[in-house]
Length: 180
Image (cartoon, rainbow, N blue to C red):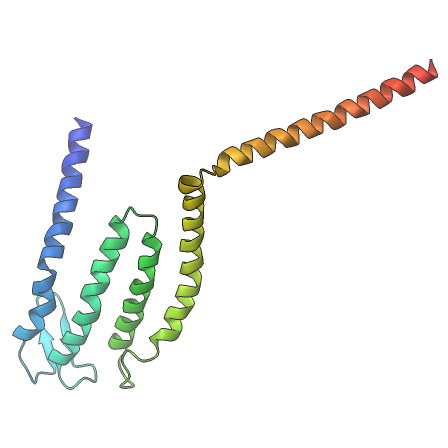
């Protein structure tokens, strides 16, 4: 009974994600159906102002071209099962910084200085992805099992400690035999 609930819950969540992905083109092109030359667009739950853009339609367009790919990349990152899924964080960071600059639009510069932030994020993510790749290549292609190697090293260390203890006991035995 519990398995059926898990399966139905999973199907509902996956169905909602699929429906959202299927509706993203409609969301992306919804700016075409907004009125022009208005300072504020009123939606049911929120409103969008011009925010220093020529009009609210232009602001809405800028928001959508940053928000929709960002959400799709986040869905991809969350649902990915490949070893390289951390690399998806690089375009996620790019769209995040771009969306932030569009929302905080005051200087008239959009999509110009985000590269410096993305380089910083890339400098962190690329070594992580490369390290994961190296571990996978060693394990699956070269047949190197790091856990087995670690266990073998632990066994060798234990043997070495036992050998040293044995030598100490033999030395004590010799000194005791000399005293007697």
